[in-house]
Length: 189
Image (cartoon, rainbow, N blue to C red; front, side, top):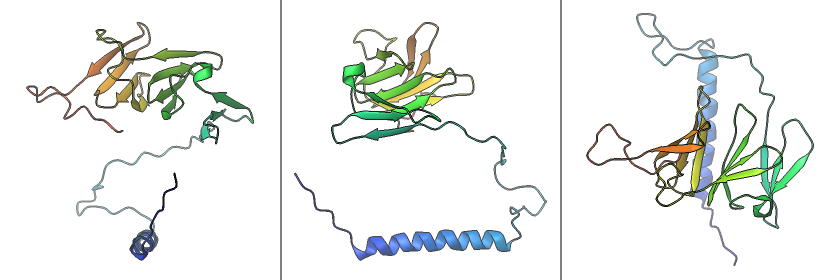
């Protein structure tokens, strides 16, 4: 089935305006001697700025080819690894990807969470009746915090914390009668 996309001149006008605005902001910043603005009392009015000299040496790419095979490009390597449901993934539609500090590759899909160690895939799915499993199978976002805790957002399932020692999940959800709970269960990032 083919789909016709309509691009109006308004789209191009908005796109040009955004580019021009960005160039203007860069020029203003350089004209102000390249220093951030200060409040009247000399304090920085914005949040603290953190700088780093660390060079990121890891990169990971995902490519989905015409045959719907998922290809992962290993960091700093010309080696390609094809992972599909035939290799143990829960689904070929990858929705989130994270390499944790231990080197595991976490792959979120539309049908579960997968942990890949370079050789084998371990899968995690929602298990009805088990409060320590994923709350939903469609993974939206993966995040590792500074303590190494893996956080998972699923489609309308709230936010889930993974405990690697027990291999269990603890889910935080919206509770209508608890104002300290999440504002909603639909998390995108």
